[in-house]
Length: 311
Image (cartoon, rainbow, N blue to C red; front, top):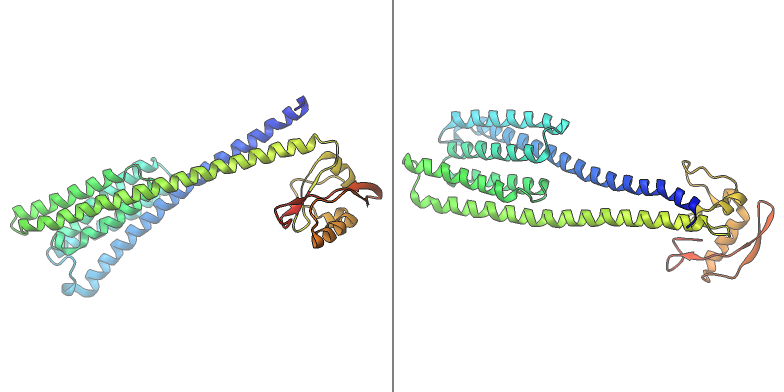
């Protein structure tokens, strides 16, 4: 590679790094958006709790043991979910800190609502399964087991409080134990899925950078060729060219919409169309007119069946 080509390669390398940074930024944006959806889920759950109590009253199976505690707990849960929307929007503090604080608050609020509904037999503890699954996907599995431990401790402490107050039976520890097993199982599945998702995203980003590198190298090789090189897609739009080809076709603005070969060289575009109809593969050079000048042209297909484009 000569010195001029080396100078041209530097901005291309910067473009590749910019693409990689953009991919990482997009990954981070997706996590923050997921956190906002998570807050929307909390708001929906709190509203459903309040509606259930207000619509069904004494017939509601939730909140039957301590209805006042349940109503105030649901209201505080709703207020907390609304407040959490603002830090998620401004992205301060860090996402993992926000997520851990929110999951800990979820455990506290849901355990209180579970206590007001009669304890582990009420089924309210199942709400924490959705919390742990969502938190595991957002955190990409890094804090899932810690979150599961928080949920298990909260449920076991609540049931112990009921047992000491003669509001529940010791045998119901089996329910609490199964809930705890479910929490860890959900956290582990979320951890595994998040790990695969993260690996897939990393490989996709790496391949994007590799393809961008190959495209830049190919462009440098094309620019250094003595012959004019023109890359055309299946729709006849000019995708790449070197200086020799541009000297024949005229300058093409890189920022504009892809130029059509039919507009720049209608005779050559017609030759390509006829060549595609028969598709003989790469053919021997033929002579045609481009901008009134006789030019020797050779077509090489792009793709196995030549349906991607031509060089």
